[in-house]
Length: 360
Image (cartoon, rainbow, N blue to C red; front, side):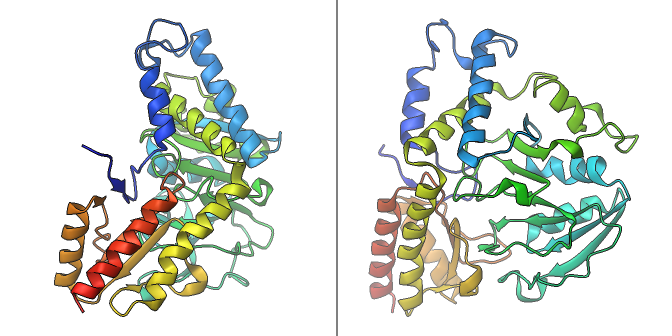
């Protein structure tokens, strides 16, 4: 069967070039006579894989020397607990609630200290980013937390919150590597890789060194201490080796396309094709205010649940899969991450035009 256009929000499509390369190396990685899946994480071959992956990510994102890069497991959701355990020194943190993942992180943080919801867009089903220019930041807050791009609701921060001098922690699971990032604006960035970088099971954390300390909450599990992971170069225990190997290949793929500036340009063009159609369509409507739209996740509806279901069914039959929207928004959602080719979005819009004609 031919490959489909996979608009899944995660795990999502990977670059075909990367999959082909991995397939070619499946049985014998660079003359080792074995797959990366089978090799020791203490081996020279794997040591090169993880070091090269880190070097390429540092290069792509211009990560300063005073930030550690950690390859972890447990997914981004495990960081909802690890962040407060490691960073809540005063026992206070401020959270901006722009969707389900920020809300879950906030609820988790409440278990470990005082978590304040300083802004929220829940009043309009998270269809916008709240004004963050003058937030009631707690004087004792150890950090301000955001989810940078909201996979479910299709919103993103085009301007960072004014944290009034407090460090910013960001979950960038769904838009990492989609555009340049000034790492120094953050105390910590972390991302689950299964949307824009690799297979599920790896989470990458980029943390300023002065935030990695021994004096964490006394009950913090050894595995969840950033210091444990940093002191052992992400090899305290067996890491998700194969996932890290694929991430490394994706980093090289992004570099081969010209890096993050080129990625941003490509993503803006891709998103514009879909948003321009939605703005001119009589049948389909986007659900997010224009100024807060994501380049990665595009939710849209027809306004009629039965018609939405019909669209998803016909689209799937035509090779456009995983377009059903999240249950909290309904309708449809096209996730158009880095690996989605331009033609995938062009063909989707062609299909939507045809569907509109037939269902006016």
